[in-house]
Image 1 (cartoon, rainbow, N blue to C red):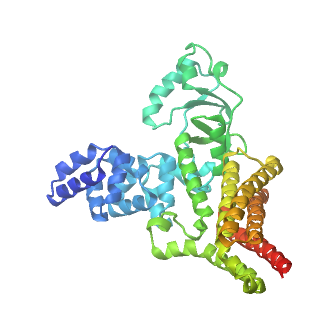
Image 2: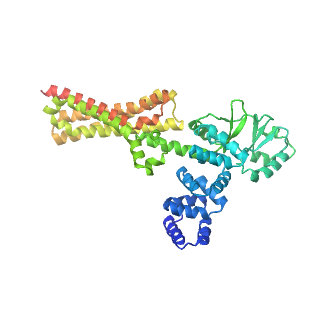
Image 3: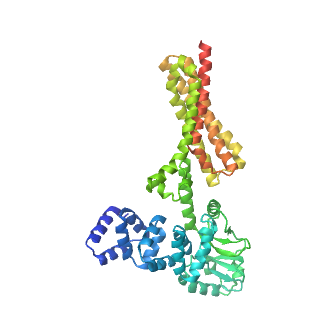
Amino acid sequence: MINIQSIVERIREIINDENSRQLKETLEGFHAADLVDIFAEITPQERLACFKQLDEDKASDLLEYLPAQLQVELLGEIDEELASRLIAKMPHDEAADVLGDMEEDESESYLDKLPHKFSSEVRELLTYNEESAGGIMNPVVLTVNAESEVKDVLDTIRIKAEKDNLDLYYVYVVDKQSHLLGVASLRKLLTSPVRRKITEIMTTDIVRLHVDDRQDYIADEFMKYQFNALPVVDLYNRLKGIVTWDDVQDIVEEETTEEIYTSSGIATEMVEDEDDILSGNLLHAVKARTPWLFITLIGEFAAVNVAHHFDYTLKFLSIIAIFMPLLTGLGGNIGTQSITLIVRGLSTGQLSLKSAFHHILRETAIGLIIGILFGTLVTLVTWGWQHSVGLGIVVGFSMIVNMMCATLIGTCIPFVLKKINIDPAIASGPVITTTIDVVGLLIYFNCATVYLLHIR
């Protein structure tokens, strides 16, 4: 494990000494992924000084790893011809991502300077939705015709692999119109007789993606089949490119981040770049975090109104007020547990809408059992503390019903949202937590009112 801080200090010393040769040698000794960590700790001026010392291959590799904001920053600070050469060395899908983050006129300027074939392929990628298979695929694919023998295919691999910067996982068999006919793994090719036809060893039962398939579907397909790459076809089954496992790794990271933000009531759709929420413009962060808090504020006013509605009960039995945080806290926590389990299960495919009724019953039963456990404990503690068995029963019974209802709400809402094609992660946001609080207070105050009427 490298010590980033000591490396950063060393690099700053070299930059201050204006020793460009030593700076170049130092930077070349690091992997591109390590350089990303280093670049994150230094100033924009220091980043630019370091970037200019990298050879073009290393600089191109580094660009693939850098966040979009830093990619655009560095490319905008160097000569446009050099920037164009660096982009041309990147995989097509990565180049499309970089250009897609630029202003349209700037992106067009780079596209005009790129090699014609590379530029036209990247332009096509930019026409697809960036969150679709077409938007993340690499259009450079190793294809062979159905008449090829294994020997011909291996010769083709040797010629094209280095030249075209191919992702070599599988070989795809196509006809003259680029229709996908079959696929063969490198393992199968290397272990087959050289004179066998590719059609004899290829698989025709192909798992494929469509150019318009969304990211969540793509991730599910990779998790299900565990392939290193999947072909992408258009409506006519013409091979357009491939999506590789590292693309999906990025998708899963993005989806997980968005799910965490959504579950916390942070509106990612309110900002163009999610990085702004954590480390960007303060106003952008405020813009992302405010909307759901306003909705929560309205919900909490509903909870206040519930308490106000039972001001008669509070007036004559004021002791019940001190137990309100106890009930809303435990109810909110157990409800959040249920929400988290269901949302995660739906996200990974472990749960489905078909199993909704079973899991609703199961979680409600769990809530009832836990509620009885905690309700009994609360009853005994309250009885011993306040010397009132009646008050203990009210608080304990409210706890039981509240925890059962919280798990019921926490389990039902994600399934309902999934049914109407809304991200279930929204269910774990502040709105649902507030709903559980309101329901919990209604249960508690009604129980307390019944008890008050009984003792009066």
